[in-house]
Every structure is written in C-alpha cells, then in structure tokens.
Image (cartoon, helix red, strand yellow):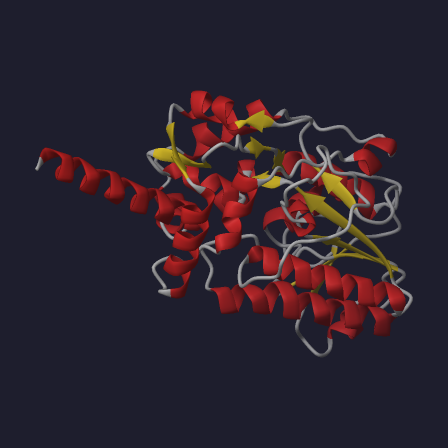
Length: 337
C-alpha cells in the first residue's frame, strides 16, 4: 500500500492488519509508519527505484494521493497524476497482478439528461480541468492504459467525500459553500446532494484490496438530499442565479485569478450526479452512513474550522456567492436613490 503512513492509507492498513487471511502487508511511504504487523519500505511513489520496493507484491493499493483543495495545483497534480503514472509503471515492471485506485464519481460528469442514479458502467463524460476533477480524469486515462498493458485495475469512485475523522483535507469541493452565509443554486433547478463518508470508502477499499470487487465501482450513501433539505439542516438560505450568469461569472473570476476554484464546481448545480454503488452492493457492501447523517457529522465537525474556511474562500461557488451579494447591495442602494 502506498501512502500507508497517514490519512486514508494508514486507516486502511490498520483495518487490513486485523485480518488473518492475508499473506502479508507492505507499507510504502516516504517514512515508515507505526502499524504493527506491516513490513515497511520507504520510498516516494515518484522514485525511479519504486519497482524495487514492490518486489514480491501481488496487489498494490495506491493511496499516496490527495483530495486537499488547499494544496497548490502544481503540487497536487504532481502527486495525483505523475505519482499514479509512476506507480502503475513500477507495478508493471515489478510483476504486480492488480492495482486498486481511488478517483471520484465526478469523472462521470454532471450533465443534463444524466440518469438518477447512474450505473457504475456509465461512460465518463467529465471535461478535464485544472482542478481535482482534471486530476481524476487523467488518472482514469492512465488506468485504462495500464489495463491494456495487462495490469488488472480496480477503481473506486466515491461521491462527494465527508472527511470524518480523517479531517477536512478529504472533504469534497461541493462542501465548500457550506462555509458561506448562503448556498448557491441555479434558478429553476433543484440541486441534489449525494455524499460518501470516508468510513464507507474504507470498507469499500477493504473489499477491493482483498479482491472481492472487480472493475470500476462507485461508493456513496443511499439516495440523495435535495438542496432544500441541506438548507434546512445547515440553517442557510439560498441565492439563485440564472445559469448563464453563474457560469460566465465563475469563468471570469477564474481567468482573473480571483478564485482558484474551477468553474466545473458549478456543474452539480445544473444537473444531478447521483450514483448507485450497484457493483459494491453485489459484493455484499452497504454504507453505514446516510446522506443526512454524514452531512450532520460534517457540519458538527467543521463549524469554526479555520483551516476549512481558509481554502473554501477560494471556491468558485463561494466567490460567486460574494459576487451575488455585492450585486444585491448595489441594487438596494440604487433603489434607495
């Protein structure tokens, strides 16, 4: 397992270490971790000698990646994309049989006419960008190439992540606007929210690691929450903008460098993206968390979290909310005149 000394990797390694049906566990990270019963091999996943560290490995779970929206984009992409490319090539050279990767349900793309829920085998239609979605689209391309070269690849695609005990670095970008006084919506469209708690991602990863799930599989809470429910739970009202205004303003703010949040963050406001997790369910998996419980946990854990607030301020939706508020203030002043 790569990225095994912290975060999602450490949490999964601790789960696997409690099993008695595995031949052995090897943790790969820049520094050795403390999980007992694990053989540690220190290496960065971009190390040209990584193949040597994978000697004797049959399955590699690649978790030396990041979902942290606060990271510099160049640093994030080097880790997520370059690191995955290096890992897959090293796995091929070392004779690894199977790799397990994690991307996001957002690779399907939130487009008008998308079925609700979306099956695991639906085509990937997300447009690549400079954000996390672009990272994941590229990782999916790398995975498809690895399969053509003979490597078996299982990819888990979680819905919007709720970091839980793993912290805000795993919170999905859709949750950014919860740090704002208002929630954004496109006029005439009711946004649908679907979440995935990291506890449920861990249980899905355990199944994938031991070979009980093949191919791509989505991971999510059952069903979805309409934004009216999210507003009620969060105690926030909405700001509704015309679709053209929302998209053009977000793109303008992004080009000007006012926000680092990709305009693609607005896609979920214009079309639903709800997945079924049918492949995992067929393997006996079921989520422990509901959308409502995961959202309540997020709201309770992140209230007053200065780190979350620091990077959410750069989100496209949050920047748009600020723009909309300024427009409303200007209109009120004009009426007063």
